[in-house]
Image: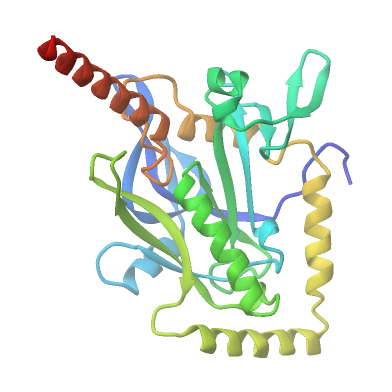
Length: 305
């Protein structure tokens, strides 16, 4: 195994909530309110749709807001990796990756380990637009049982919700997360930071028409069949864990460039709501809200005087 190269789950496609479009000569992220499944191929600036995108849409009415999925691993943290990430906007290369306690940062002397105080408490992170960045791998369909679709997000809501659900489902099923029949579901909410307009995030639920008890029974049956066939889930989890640990950063140079374009665009005057969750605008919205409150306070102070 090549050292320094993270061995990640084989990816056959992408799950996105939005796309990158060209406006005024700049490529900018554009939000959406439904899922889109694509291949890993770009043609004329657009990701080519995956065949499953059309078949899933035919199975539902209206927009694609739920996707039936299985997970490759029983360990929740192998299915969803979330970190605070800062990318070089010019090259797309990762510069600093941390978990809130420690980080790996690229310096002139190489990759250095140091403390991580989260983006809010890190001067280096604030200056470079450090954000939470999550990657979720899910299996869709039965064509490739060890292949997966990857969903990338910089949404606090999506990362927090998915992490909680993964750990909860793992706990209630007796560590049979990889056998549970689940679905990704798009949810909407309104907050003061979104000025009460709808923002969307990704949730993980039991499939529509089923119950948690039925899903656990199905998971136990699938686990029994796999063990009878000689399927070693523990060994698969161990192999994945070793693969992730083999490299300093998970994303390759090519992937990092696409991530930087989609989630970390150059300043363009947009609302900062991009990527997956339409709620990535926390910092931008907070600043604009603070400015409005400051102006209002100044006006009220002037009237009182």
